[in-house]
Amino acid sequence: MIVFDQVQKSYQVKGQAIPALQPTSMTIETGEIFGIVGHSGAGKSTLVRLINLLEPPTSGRILIDDENITDYSPAELRAFRRKVGMIFQHFNLLSSKTVADNIAFPMKLAGIYSQQEIRDRVDELLKRVSLADQASKYPSQLSGGQKQRVGIARALACRPTILLCDEATSALDPQTTQSVLRLLADINKELGLTIVLITHEMDVVRRVCDRVAVMDAGEVVEMGKVSDVFLHPKHPTTRDFVFESEHIDHEDMQRDLAKAKGRILRLTFRGESTYTPLLGSVARESGVDFSILSGRIDHIKDTPYGQLTLSLVGGDLDLAMNALKAADVHVEVLR
Amino acid sequence: MEALMEGLMGNVDWAEIGWASWDTLIMVGMSLLFSVLIGLPVGVLLFLFGKRQLLEQPVAYAVLSFVVNVLRSVPFIILLIVMIPFTVMLIGTSLGVAGAIPPLVAGGAPFFARLVETSLREVDRGIIEATQAMGANVRQIVFGALLPEALPGLIAGITVTAITLVSYAAMSGVIGGGGLGDLAIRFGYQRFQTDVMVITVALLVIFVQILQMVGDRLVLYFSRK
Image 1: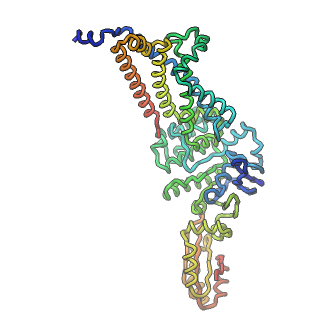
Image 2 (image 1 turned 90 degrees about the horizontal axis):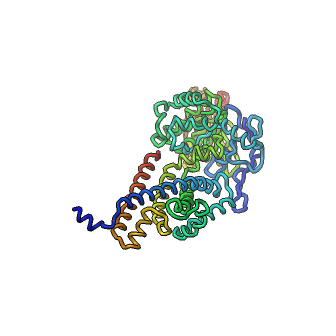
């Protein structure tokens, strides 16, 4: 469990304190994938670097499994960092070392593993990230996705309990992003490892995260389960991120809604209700006619969801709405 | 043919040329060795003490940087003369091959130190950060990540330093340093033996060419980017 207790960070620039993170308190549970989303400069890089104290906080406490890491001596801090893996946007692999040596590097630094243990672990990890045949290549000979998989294997070498991902997919193409995210999700499940992931893409959060914090100007403005934040965003910044990831142009949508007749509802289906043939039966029973103005059907992590914006004309509107609510559909009246 | 050679190169004592070449080789080799042994740690410290670096120490950086700059700003011919009492104190003589080595190191080490500092700065900061995140201490970061990553740059730096030392070694002939430079000054310059001058210059050119070629090969061999 990672607990931020009134953690604040500011930088001294020419004698002036520039705030990077407003006092923040939050808890990241053991074993979850926690996303932090924000535009560049929102303070998410700072936030993730506070967890392994690459950036020390200006004030406040950071507790990891009930230990205050801000009290650690330099030696304790180094021992602690071995239990926190980290992967980076630009991979940060050592160009002078082979793939296998890169993965072995943190184990060698730890100085507590035998040659044999290191060899076995490297082999195991190479297989885990499907790079067994690339062991003796140098990073410059690999593709971006392969480099990130080496980064992941390296981060896992000392069997960490926390994995920090700093924009780990931002330099990758969509397909590679997908495979790296899947690998992260699998690792999380297999090893029960806590993953803290920062990104500027809501889509990344939607695919793998359990919970999310949205940051804006050094402040966490919204936090909660991904399905709640994603389907019912409250803060304007969150809404921007969701629209952006859905490729929705806000103004276009408003124009479309203005043209529609009757009541406008937004229905949100989650889980099994996504697959129930509900709309047709409700329309028949209540005599309401509907047209779909916009909609999306996708997954949040493993949960299917659908969100439809409908205009409803005629019939018994209340009956229709009650029937939908009874079937566990979230109904929101837009007009 | 032999007569022609005799006419063109009448003054050339090939045994003397051989010995002088060997002396130059020793002077450059020894002074390069000590320049690297001293310049490398100084360069690493310059880097670590620098702004926003691992051991940021503005005062220590300023002092070290000042010393390096002073040594580098004195023209080498002056440095040779200024160093004479110190050289005598250190090895008993300021003459010959041995006497030339201390001033050569005094010129070469600060030069190489700056090159080391520059090539360490070229290493991606992300690599330092990643190594730090693995729980490495400063020593491990320097030896495990920084120096291996900067290796091609360091080798290029050694090459440039070696070539600079070839020309410095030749200059040391002025104060009786020995080697090809000494030969060129005593015979080529003071006795107007142009043929000796031409030969020494040609040998120095060949020497520098070989150094550069070997250096470039090594840089290429160790570059993984």
